Image: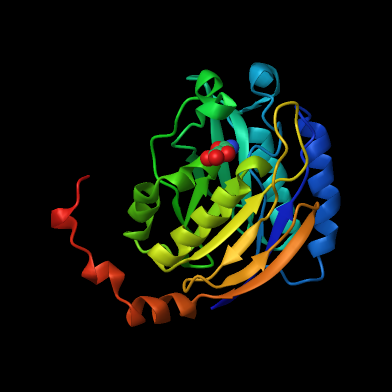
Length: 262
Ligand SMILES: NC(=O)CCC(=O)C(=O)O
C-alpha cells in the first residue's frame, strides 16, 4: 500500500491554543487538493512548552482538541496523527498524542511515557502508562513522543507487535538536532520500519527548535529531510518495502531474547 504523508512543520505560539488552532485550520486548505492520506502535527502544538500555565491552558480531557481534529479529518477526508497536546485530567496534566481517522474517529490516545527533565516535564506532567499502538488504513502503526526515541527498547516493544510505521512527534531543540537525525535513522534501520517524524520550528523563551522533520524508509533511506523553515512537507511511502526488508535480513526471527536483559 502506498500512502502520501504531510508533515506540518510549524512554529507554535507560546501558550496560545486558539492562535495555534487557527494556524492549523487555515493551513489545512493547502492539503485539500493533494490527495494526502495522513497529516502529522508536532508535539504540544496547542500550548508549546508553557508548562507553568498548564492548569489554565491545557485541554480538559482533550475534548476540544479531539473535536477540532475530528472536524478537520472529516472535512478533508484525511487521517491525522495529531501531534500531542497538553491534556488536563483529574490526576494531572499529560503530554497526549491524538490519532484520528478519516471518519473523524479517535483511534488512539498515547500519553508520553518518558518525561524530559531538561525541559522540566517531570515537574508539570505525569507519565503515560500504556503503549502507542494503533492501526491507520488497516496498517499496524505506533506513535511516540520526542524524548521517547532515546529508548530503543520502548520502540522495539511496539515493533514486536508488528508496527510498520513509527510516527514521532516532537519539539526537539536545534542544539541537539544531530541526535534527532541519528536516533531516527537508527530506529528505522534497527526496526526495519518507516519512521515518520514531525518536529516544530521557531523558538520559545528557553529553546530554539530544530525542524528537520523526516521520513525514513525501512532500509534507512531518507525519503524526506526538511530544513528549519515553517511549512507543510510532503512524502510518499510504500509499505510493501517493510516486508521486503524484513525478509531480506530477518532480524526479528534472528533475535536472541533469552540472552537479553529486560
Ligand atoms: N520535547 C522533548 O522531549 C525533547 C527531547 C530532547 O530534546 C532530547 O534531546 O531528547
